[in-house]
Length: 368
Image 1: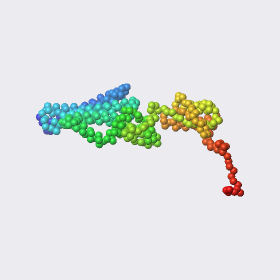
Image 2: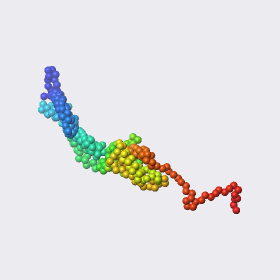
Image 3: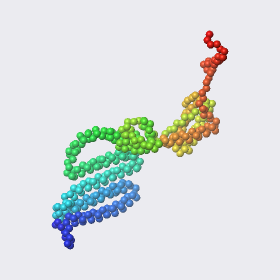
Image 4: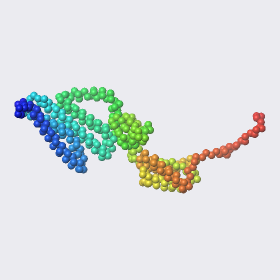
């Protein structure tokens, strides 16, 4: 049976079957949408997040799966009604297999990438630092396997391809040596974790800034003037790095002070500690529970020098803590009569027996 008569109109059987299967596919897609919308609303209200991720990852692959099922159904109907030659017959099975592989790849990719993002949102420092690299590796593995599966479905032998990967990989590695060096240096930065996203670091070349992104080729560092330094991962992994956020963000802030030689040092120490403790407790970026201290260390040319140790919550906030302390200390020293001396240069003409020789008069004789 190759044609079906409807009144005076003769329709090819394969076209009629295709239309019927297409209508069935539309019905199934509507049912799928109806069920998924309601299931998604339920899972969004639950405390678990992977059920919502699973449904969202399966949305588009389920659409492809319905189309694949309809293609298999169409193939069976064509064979049942004896339609051996048609634009659909013979090609539907291959197309269905390719679509099914494609649906599986999309589902695995969306679920894996979504799981990485969920773990990064939970505060995983490793995933936050390496999100871009891990996404690239995951997608490369997934779609590489999928490509081999599709080639096998099309009847292309993958054995020679796999066998030639050794020589090809060597050639690619030589051609892309700088790129691969940066990639593996990025992997090393992620594994060793000398820096993390949002850390404040200083490079051996002097640049300071926040780590914005550790990519597969380069690391982006946003400096305080709001410009960005882009460092190749290979150069960054081989350079000396100061991480001001490791092991913690808090850091000491030394402040150098000089007082007059006639000062009562015990009084100076007591007043200085009072001001330092008050600043650390009241300033928004000070560490209130830090046990600050004062050290006298130098008899300078015009002052006795001491160091006051403060504590700031983060590196770049130390400037404001130090500024507030200097202003408060200057005011308190003035109230307590503690003198911060100016530099003084004195000439002692009597030291070491030095004498002033009178200048010769206008009538003095020259020579003897």
